[in-house]
Length: 438
Image (cartoon, rainbow, N blue to C red):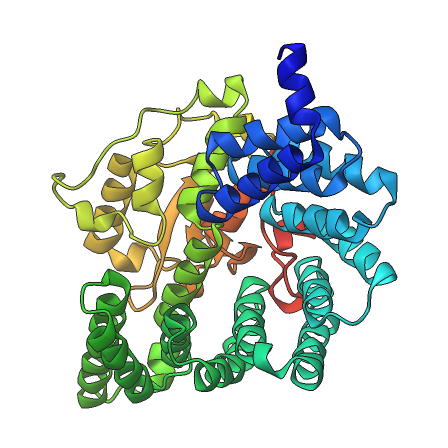
């Protein structure tokens, strides 16, 4: 910039105009490169202007540059000026977005050391507590934030109720805790379709099939092209038909409950929405696989056109063989665990299932009337098997099943963490903590 241009820009009115334009553009198109250009121009002549650094940090965060956003937020926080609390809130928000739960909790406490009147700050604290494993304290804090909102900012109450429902779901609150919160959120804001969808699935987990169908049909009338709404209604009706047929065969709800099919579907949907599902775990694992382990894995395959493809289970095995179609025999030690389990190939799963089906009496550890899906073997007669509710267990001939992990996705996330990758999962509730993580 030449001297004339610099002089013109140094004019305070020109600075304010540029800043106003940057904020206006950020509000309309937060990723527009002109936002950074204008903010940088202002900082060139007024580097101490913390609000502009925060604007630039917000822009960089939305553009996906978390490292630069964090640098800018920390720079402002380090000044301890009148923008400190906003910098702390920005750092809290970034930590949540990056699934750095302990960091989010630290900044949540920092914010509240400065300001205690905003209900949203207290709700963010509760969410961070719950995500870090302080479940009951966190959920109680979230409830108290809603109560504070009703006293101090009644117009925000629908927003607070919706946020509570989302945060309860995100921290693995059980359906009997989530459902009343979601119902209250829906009464306050019937247009909150995301909460309504999750409420419908929660009704299914509570075996309230008529309520789930009624809510699903209402959502489908409002959003007729939304696949998730269609899926809720279709699934509900399918389950109702299964229940009716089971009743005709003298099978009750308890028999269906024992399979855990509905609970598994709910958890898979929840995990998908939170980005911690099986597919996400496999993608994250790909980023951190040690070279010696990768070398043992076969290329993935699609089993869609394979004969007897239905023998490869849909809980996890189908996704695993699509990722890598098993491992070389005897290579299980490459995972670095005490027991050398390796992935089974689709052909091995199909052959084993056919063998069991042909002579069930010779395979008493694989009962016909139970759900099971073998996924790994130690090549010495033991297997890792998915059973009811999606739990992963170790199965050895003549021994009771031994718990290994809450799900295949959990087992894989444990490996991601072992190999130095980020673990985005909320801390598990004590009753649900997988043995592999104790």
